[in-house]
Image (cartoon, rainbow, N blue to C red; front, side, top):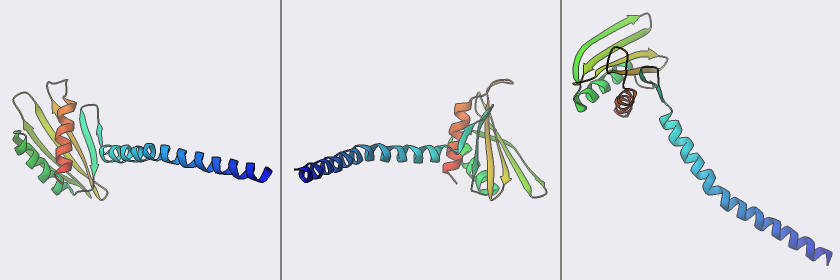
Amino acid sequence: MTGEVHVHIRNQFSRVRLVLALAVSPVLATGCLVAAAAGAGAAIHLSDRGAESLVTASVDQAYAAAQRVFKDMNITEGKSSSERDGDVETRQLEGSTTDRDITVTIKSEGEGAHVEVVARTSAVTWDKDLARQILERIVAGM
């Protein structure tokens, strides 16, 4: 009888492990999806005045993407500038809507670039949501 009890307990333990594995696997899969989504979106950070991201594209690619986004979002392109300090290249694109001044600053960093978008509503206030939207489109367009 002892052998039968041992087998029964072992079978019960195996069933419990199976049930737990089946119950936990969707949670783990969802967690992985959430982590992947967070990883994809984690590249964009809100700063004090706007949004910024490190991208694997070159400064030229990011600048071209910013120009396309300006056109797509009806942001009137204004002044642009380009500087080089040693190995670091910085390009800036300015534009405006009826009530926002937009500045995109792209600076070479390692194998890619650091992109910052600022959407100013006044001398002391910024529209971080608009900056994030513009940056998301720039990143998607590269």
